[in-house]
Image (tube, rainbow, N blue to C red; front, side, top):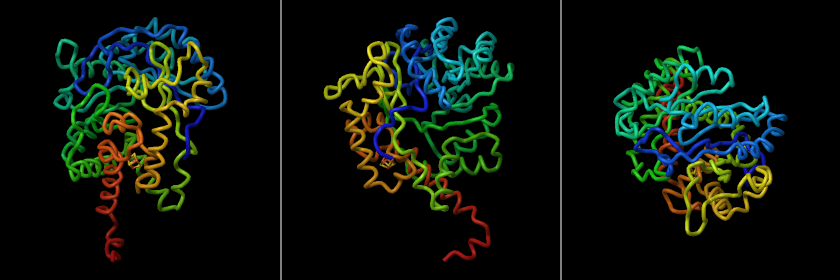
Length: 372
Ligand code: SF4
């Protein structure tokens, strides 16, 4: 895997910077301001995306802020320039979902992913702008999705990973009824400067217990665990070298004003004395495909690609990880060409170790007897 691919597998779009919640761990700098994306930005993005979607599966992920805070009329206008082949997704806090939104999702064939951190007691960081708990509003939105028979994914942020948390978390999401679950250990990035260092054994135990809970009842696609198992199986088959893509997916984020930041949505809206605003261009001035073709030449991206090469030569987890996330390096290390971060330890290294610990603990008695 070398360099950046010129064609992404999906584009992240920011229909508004506004979020109606004020979660303690949020990385977004302008979430109190309602800066909305003009339709001209969506038209410019669609001009590059529609040909990509004609030749293979392609997604647009409406992110935010809170994308539903843009309103149905604006979201429909922003989606209109995209061809029927483009898959649309929203990542939402679910608090605004009601019957009308469910009808909108069904009509526009939008796939929904909700952000919820587990049972009520684990959602203490999720609060409204007035500081009130948002949990009841979140579950009301999820109930609307279920009432309408709409499948959904879920994304949970875990801020105190421990073995005891894992079974509780998995049982909660089984009951919630999501099809896919992604688990993020809280990250130090953007305007969230909270420490994300955790006890190594606790984090490894968290992942090992999560695998155990999933194996007891694997009704949910558990994103991180399935990745790890696919990697472990490929190592055993001798095919792991073919798992990483030939080049990095640039994952462009198109901000409300048309500016494009590659690799890490979390960098959008920030500036740095060395790197400026991290943008590789603006779709109102340059076609997206042209911006991406030249994105590897953006100063900070070159620094990041040096960091990926440093990972390749120094980290035994590179074949699984592929070099990590740009924003984690920047916000934890202050540079893009460093290597190991707390995010690596929490969400890559200890994840793989937890999966392997689980496998070791559940070897068949025959295999154990043969252990040297
Ligand atoms: S785990 Fe961290 S140090 Fe290792 S390859 Fe991934 S980003 Fe690099």
